[in-house]
Amino acid sequence: MQAYMLHFLCWIIFRRQVQMQDVIFVINPGSTSTKYGVFSETGAILEESVDHDVDSLKQFEKATDQFDLRYTAVMKAVERHFDPEKQCLVAVVGRGGPLKPLDGGVYRINEKMLSDYKSCRFANHASNMGSMIAAKLAAQWSVPSFIADPVTVDNFWDVSRISGFPGIKRKCRSHALNIRATARRHAESIGKTLVDVNYVVAHIGGGISICALEGGEIRDVNDGLLGEGPFSPQRAGVLPLNGVIDLCFSAKPKNEIERDFSINSGFQGYLGTSNLREVIEKMKDGDKEADLVYRAFVFQVAKEIGREAAALKGNFEAVLITGGIAYSDVFIEDLKEYIGFLGTIAVFPGEGEMQALGEAGFLALSGTVPIKEYS
Image 1 (spheres, rainbow, N blue to C red):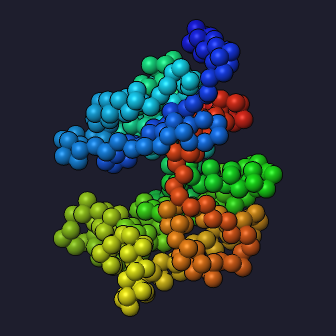
Image 2 (cartoon, rainbow, N blue to C red; image 1 turned 90 degrees about the horizontal axis):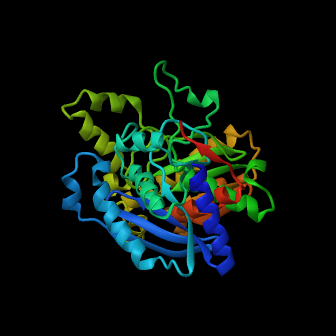
Image 3 (cartoon, one colour; image 1 turned 120 degrees about the vertical axis):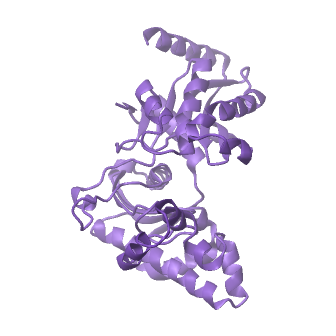
């Protein structure tokens, strides 16, 4: 480890002498594509995506079995875009997939983490490969590799874990990366740091996470994957229990019910599309069902924001709206009719994952945030 750090420090000194630009590679695997980017301290130099053949991916039992295919594609892209004569690679940051519940922050990729990801110990998800690809790329250049704020970041209050039924605990699963990065940006814009302020943050996209953020820690949030909160473009959100019980005793197998709740619900289930723009067009064309479902969506999102505002006892700086749906001016204006009384509403459109990963890497290397060890 000492020899490794000495090599890294010597490379940094050399870079400073020839005035090379510090850059970080960012890796973000999705279900059928892998996003990659090159980031400097001032922002993105490059953001692109490699699409993978769907039929090729189907042959693999586990998501992580796709590693060689994805790594090769990303490595070719890196070789095309990285200029070692002008750029100094200082780290590689991968998207963090599901792990055990842990604190938010930046984590060094180590063998324990890689073992949990490779075995899909906590979930069989493409994002598990973010750390795997990052670690191998980093080894090529002898630089550090990190993940930041994976979906299982968990700083719940004890009361947040109580579901109402013994034996079932509420889980903290959220868009933690974008939530914390968005809050950090707003805090900086008002001359504060993330630990100084509280927020209600609503990530509204294909999935929805609406949380009470206290000093940068997620204290309460809906489990948007399977269980709680508003319905989303494809997901069911919270449901009446009697209907769920009936489905459990229907002829449908468990995996089909899970699929229906996670990808065949929400806008997709009611209207046959998961695209909000198409829903709004249907409304303009006089589709009354589309109008009703859309208004119910805004209504449910607003209620969840109000719930988290109450969880913080009204002690928060602002309500932050982020995610892909935040690009819709129509949605934002309709939402403000419900939540405007809560105070400052700040909108940060987009998923922001790539930028957040790049920022996290530089914050860690500068010592602004600590580098944590996964164990």
